[in-house]
Length: 120
Image (cartoon, rainbow, N blue to C red):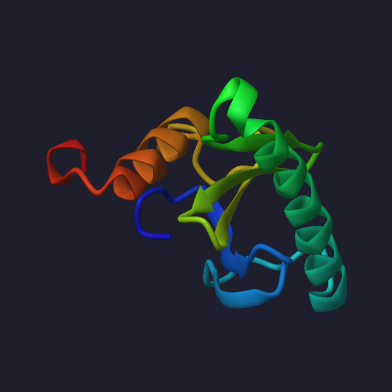
């Protein structure tokens, strides 16, 4: 949450989409109810299972981006058993369009996941 002011919400789930940890930016109202969020994360986890099946042919998935009118959600595998979800406001609803954005968030999370301290 501290890496970019445009991050609204982040969550860690297991591969079945069960929420293990979550964080919300203070002062931000969620668009989805907790039940809708959980259902959405479960659907996304199913998509990642499909990507894993293709990995022997096309390589491991690094991240996926889903963009909606109000939010952009980025999903990253966290080891073999978990996923990280990060959502940010789309350009029309972001809090500060001069504070980085999708590309910077993706690069930052990939650097953290690489465990290479020189990239952070």
